[in-house]
Amino acid sequence: MTSNRDSEAGDAVERLGGRAARRFAAAAPALRPGPLGAEATGAGLAGDRSAPAGQAALALVQAQASAFLHHLPDARAGAASVAALLEMREAGRRLRTALDIFSGFLPRDLRGLAGELDWLGALLSGLRALGMQMEVLVQIEPSRTPLFASPEESVELTGLFREELLAARMRLQAALASPRSFALEEALRRLLSDGFAPDGARDGEPIGPIAARLLKERFRVYRDLGDELAAAAPASGPHALRAPAEALYHALEFFEPLFGAPARDLLARAARVEELLCGLQDACFAISLLRSLARGREAPLSAATLFALGVMAERQHRNGEKAERRFARAFRKSTGKRWHRLNAALGPG
Image (cartoon, rainbow, N blue to C red; front, side, top):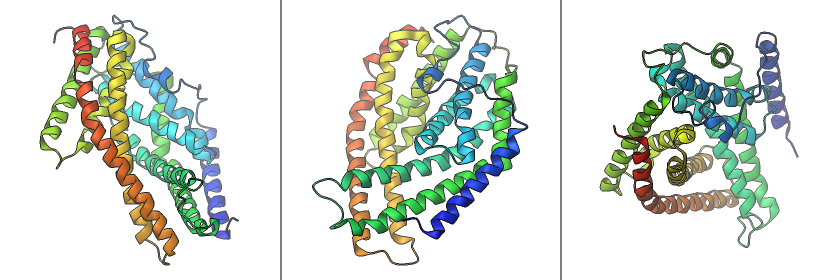
């Protein structure tokens, strides 16, 4: 049963999103629904290594911007599902990587969008972490070893997660209704409608050699840091490799149409590393979240709820340990023969 407090908070979210949507509707140009997911990754390249680099940069950045903006109207109006918000988060991460990869070709005002995407991405990541814990709770309860002795005991924890999810969505709604968010959207819509004049003397060069150099640079950063962390284990752990691994993964996605099977093969290895690093980060984030839920309440939680939070935290700890154990082998495979095949296809340099 929904409490008055939850109902009032939900109404506030709806009002906030509604005002934001109405305020922008008249001024914003119509958004053409863009490609989503894998369709957006290599858009505009189509295997043509002779395409001008500036043109390829524009096509890739526009594809990612379109995918991100596809979910923004519903997110701002409070009508987006959690799944849609997670798709928006992933599109934002791809766009962030595209801006980084092609920073040498972009005007200065576009390079500055990376920080704004990080800002919204952090809010979307908080929602993701809460949603994952709700899913864990749903999965555990029907099992042979449920967390609670009776369904009544689960009411407090379920309500706690729902309250936190609502608060996270309200924070996101407030951010999406802010001038900062509208400035970001305006810049991305302008990018879609007007494009940009590539900044740099190399924009007319063919994309093939430039993509090869960018892939090699990102692989070297990834491999060297991974080797350094492996030598320092277990003190350092693989956490610091997340950003270079993600950059390599998305770069392989973007440029796979140019280099074919060797790029696809390494992409599969990079995807496994990315999956494990993401799982490790999720586990750490979840443990921090569960700890804050257990400690940060004005009224004391019941023994049953505290026990359940402890069990969930222990499960996340085991998940993190499992991901960390599997990471070393996955990393070695991603720097082995599949990389050597791709490196040969990329050419000297």
